[in-house]
Length: 388
Image (cartoon, rainbow, N blue to C red; front, side):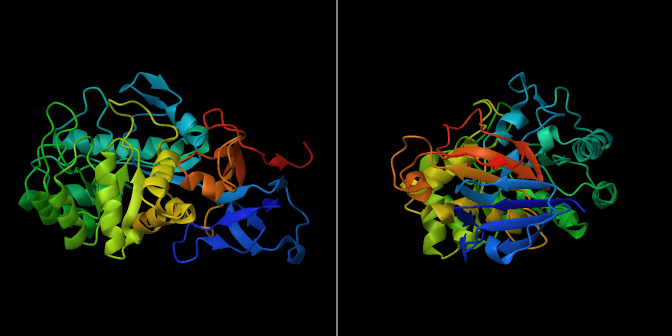
């Protein structure tokens, strides 16, 4: 058995809105899964393959980006950039979810081709994790002409996601609903494009189409890039129970409207976070941290709750075994500290003032995947691996 011990944790964030802070200072993981959470004085720390001294910093579940557009490996032709996923790992993100591999040059739109691309994308990210990051990909963009058997074929081959409904030729509610229902029947989660066109050739998807389609997640409810009118955003929040995905590449004012509406509805557990990158606006390695800081500071949300938007809320919405500090979940963590010279008495107070924390280490499946971040401001303290 492979055993990891992380002790001397100063603050343990759970990812759970109902109890965002845990009274514990130590975690033991065995074979990549969380085994014990508690006080080091009460735990058996012997026999560990790796022992991390957290040096009193904060440990949280690895962050989740609910909305990316990967292509292949760690390369994106959208910005002609290599190692963008590795850069995102340096922003504390350990899991990423595709909303469609739409930036592939010559992306096939015929039925045979789109199924082949979805299956291939699922396979190559299943077989290769860039820098250890878990990329859930193979998200076909639905096109006119798809039939129920096509969804069954993709699901049987391991495809579990639909790309953004509305990015292909299916833009009307009735057709979208029919296909979303087929996808759901075979265990595939769905997301819909929301708002104005993102690139030339795409189109407006308004609240009526979103509600009729009935997807599991309302993709970039704050626009990608252009948001819907306020009344339509409020209507979406009030009229369904789908995930409310707020993205970095959207309208920040609309993001705050979504947050405030969800809070009024007492449904903050529906709020999840993505970047919607790579996109025309670039790659955002710190996008999830920036959204957490923005929503906490301008949205008046305690930082420990805002961290749940990018961890446990997404994990529960997406039915993942990451994003929560809970026995049996994957040992995927980000260790952070207040950035050097940043205002605030604690890391949580600093984040609620709008500041980014400094990432000192990431761990995926119980293995250290990065050390002091090259992208965040430098952390005050950083964890160390004992014996090095």
